[in-house]
Length: 421
Image (cartoon, rainbow, N blue to C red; front, side):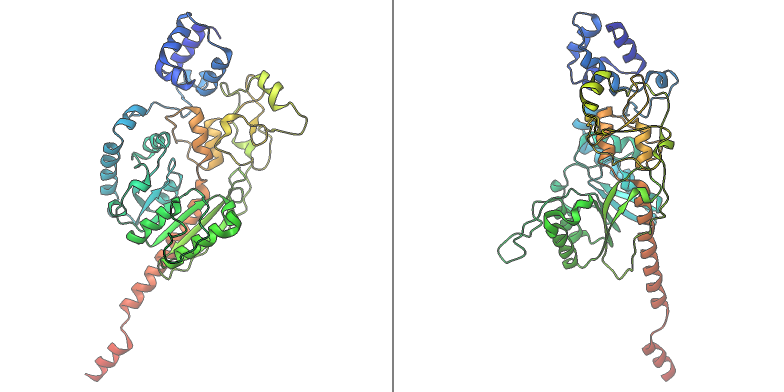
């Protein structure tokens, strides 16, 4: 690809020189020299640029492959983050009045959990996410800029809510226990932040999501501390590992889920419908721009005849392997690639990733393709959480109905007093 072709492709993608340079981690001056012909663009940069931009055919047709220019720029978000978070949260909280229930979204990522609980009738009144790229994607799709580092947010500044949602990082806890004179074993972990907020705000429900390895993490000590801590706070816990592929999602993705109630609600996790979906039916055809070079295939992907990496096409049945956040690194042992494209092998497209994660087709990515893969690999499968959220709200409603019936029914003492009169 010559410099005039690079420039033409950039313009078709609707990118400025600065944006294009940022995609390949170059400075604006270097990019200008590439386009002017004063310097030769290395083939590696050309390949990287082409991989990170939407395919040219789709752009010509006005379809930007879900990569868009956001209404606020990355720099604006970085510079005015607190102000933007305050403003968008105020609007969000006003709109939440009258909702079926209110929830908060901690360690929010791009808001997959939010989608599920909104579908169940809830309204989000607070969100927190430390990664600025994820903040931008969250804002683009939900209209709210999440606050940043949760450790710097006072629990008293978080609005009242019914459900606390969190896909928190898994970290080892201290074996010390709660002996006098020592810190609580969760101190310094992100789970401790959940405990801190739940202790003060007292939501009716906690919904937590994590990797399945949490069950055996630190020889089971991590889960043990979590359950004991929540029990001490007065929460009744239910937990289970579920696989997205059992819910009609074309991806093997097991995750640990924990639901904890502060009341007497009886809860059960949804029974997986055991509906299987074929990843082949989710694939797009004749895709340009996601191709893996012949050189990389020969020298790395297929350097051994060991059945790796896994290749799929439109005839592939069953689910794909777990989509990981490092997918953009084209790892032969963990990656799943598509038999398609200019070189015969390509990466999954943005739309294919969304389908494998249960995200709506309308979901937009105002970030680079590398960030898109990171965000999808770190996200949740919405389909599974929708089923769990439905069971949570049913448990709350059932418990509320029982309370209302008891309140409406006169007590035996009241009946006796009436009869005595």
